[in-house]
Length: 488
Image 1 (cartoon, helix red, strand yellow):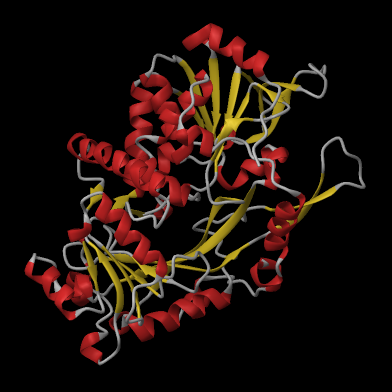
Image 2 (cartoon, rainbow, N blue to C red; image 1 turned 120 degrees about the horizontal axis):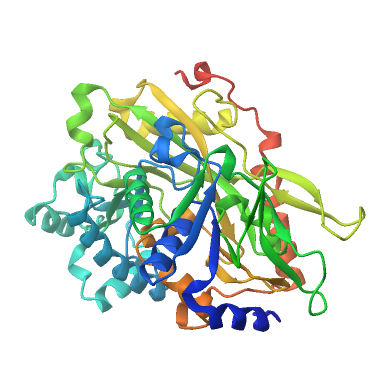
């Protein structure tokens, strides 16, 4: 399924110039920040980041109007990846860096709150059996507790974890079956604070930023002539204000917009969105939901993205809890003419909708009602609590759920770094190391795993069908139009 491009000449030119090359990164989210950080830490001096979001003003907080997958209050950090042991190893590597950053930052960025992945099944799900085997191989089996086993719950409590950590939805006290796993090695990341922390590091190391309207990229900038057969040479980017930004290498780390800027990636990447709601916790209930008492709490976990699961995150500094609902993952399908292929060649792409504090029009009412019903049934003390914010969290999703980090076939001087900021957030300290390896022509198991893929016709057809499915189509939904739609 892997195909390598004929961009070797351009790559050799880049390698021969070493750290003297100019590099422009589209996107100041997790992938772009991590890439810039590792380039600057390894001697590259001409590194620029462009992004349409005013992250230096919003500090990546959705409460300040930031709108991207990286702009969040909480993200999961975990090492349990079922049979995907390579991601477990990558996560363990990242955890060590997060611990180091905890010492550098003004307050901890990683919080070991634990993660309760719950259901009503007595037996472990297949994905959890694999998780147990993986964690046992790492010597971390004792950090995993099977919740259907009373003795295991008692073991967790005897080791200092509270009742609400092992049974966050109070199922046993209500006579309801409790299954799943409490993973005490997991926790959450203060997402917006972490991104702000890294952006400052990038600036301190000499990285240049163009953030806000002046950083909104409209297209890649190409040389007028074709080179090496079908090859096109990328010279930089053009922003919506008409300004040209030239560079030797363009790294597209534009999240859910990546496949729009690089159409060749649209057979591998798409834009998908889960629904996020922020619930204002009454002061009388806040103690229960603080990270010391309440873990990341997932209901109906199966290991599948669209299983109907809900995730509740511990209380944040705004006095709210974040609830994530991923069933379905929404698509906003538009039809684009394929560049250079004529009007007969039309491609259906899922493209992110926008959101701001002033405009609250992109959230399906059905998702809001699902979240309200979940609250009433599982965290009833929050029933009727104010929903202060609801939005779609758009992310880039790949055809096989692995990242895409490679030179783009047919585009000299262009690298794509994408495939899921939600999944990738935990790797913020380390992911850029692998982008650097791709840039320098060094390869390991990860760069090989994330290299450019050429899916079969059937795989592409299935991927497109997923995007065009009516059950995921925003166009088939009634959308919220104001805060009134969030009321109980």
